[in-house]
Length: 430
Image (tube, rainbow, N blue to C red; front, side, top):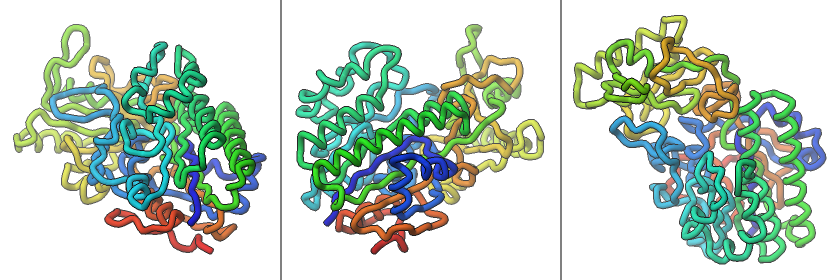
């Protein structure tokens, strides 16, 4: 049985592979790797939804992580993000591995707070936190022994306005590989490519600089395995959670709903009451009705949204109600419609503007110059590469599905992951 090390790069695009092939550490790895050139993410292609599907092999309707943010009815925008493993409704790859007696390690993986893994440092400090007490979020959600052993050394990376989760993750990962026996399955999740793309766009020079930093981080991990003497017995995986797409404008459907009398705001611009409310996923939007049982309201909102398909200012690609969304994209939750545009736009949540279109905000994860959170039909998909004792080198597979990754990694670990929506990726095995 091989060990598995997963290096996850947030917002890795399929179009990055040619650049990576020329880099000093990614290049040799990709030359000997089996590569799935394009991986279709789940809907919505948001970080937390995708990471949960990567580990469970299930679509959103089954694992229940429907957004980065907690979603519930009542007009609640900007809720705290999902953080705790108990919110995931199905077992993960690491749960199944532990049942088989294998050792497990998860570093900076979303929705893993309090997970019953052998080693766990979850991605749990709130998005946008710039304070100096991040340990309060890790206490009782991370493995106590890891927190005690490494936070005093590396916790400084999580503090202040220039905090860096990636620096904390890499420092902890290298220490674990040096101080402990290598876990049978080890997850290492990096964030900064996603932030660069939200700030600069998909193909900016700053993005390539960040990808080169990830190359150096990956090289450090490979050297750690080499020094440990376990590189030749480890199946190493590089994967992404979603791609990103450049956007030119930001569409605020809540402004349209206000103009149509479906939403009311207070003098300060905040929400007063609503009949229909849009929640952004970035490239798509959920629509919540005040009363889902009000058939007249549902028909009124559907008619309005359907009219936007032919309106060149909106050019909606589809309008799907909850049942249709479940059938087409395997997504379910507290919403009544989902929409996406054919235009290179992202959806915002402002409701106090005069015009339905607003400006982009560099760095914002929903309305930056590039974003994600759309459907699998979007141009910029992600990729999956693996190399090691179980993997045939040089294999190229054109297309795969995100829900296939957990069953595939389970096979590397020597067991079958039952009751998933995905299947083992064939054609890459020795």
